[in-house]
Amino acid sequence: MKKQSVFVLVTVLAAVVAFSGMLVASADQENNIDIPHEHEYYVSSFDKGEAVVTCEICGDSYDDNFTDHLNNTGDDVFDVNYDGIVNGKDYAYLKQHKTGWRSIDDSVWEIPINLL
Image (cartoon, rainbow, N blue to C red; front, top):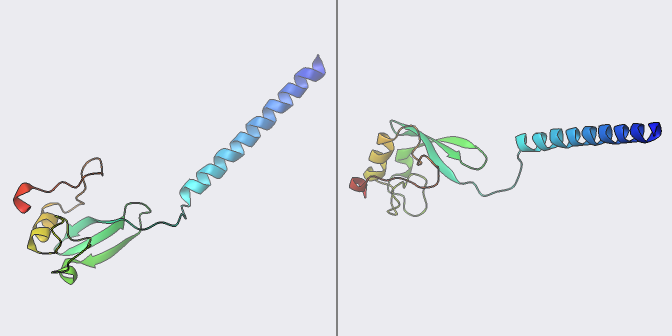
């Protein structure tokens, strides 16, 4: 009976140690994200035409200037009203929302009707 309880105790301790190692490895992987992906950038802050543009997946960011994108057509991070061109309407909206302009739940862009 004594050998059986020692065996059970050793087995339980080995399982706990193994599980702890898995948790540490998992936490390390979460902190070192290196998964290939296509960046999904948004303007995370905006002040006087200067913007910080950030990837919502990995957090990569860079500084950019609105005027460098003025009159660009197509897919442009500064085309915040999605009308196909970067113009004064986009600037007005960015100026109004200086500290990032995604909705509370980060899934839907909110654009005031008067800017459309």
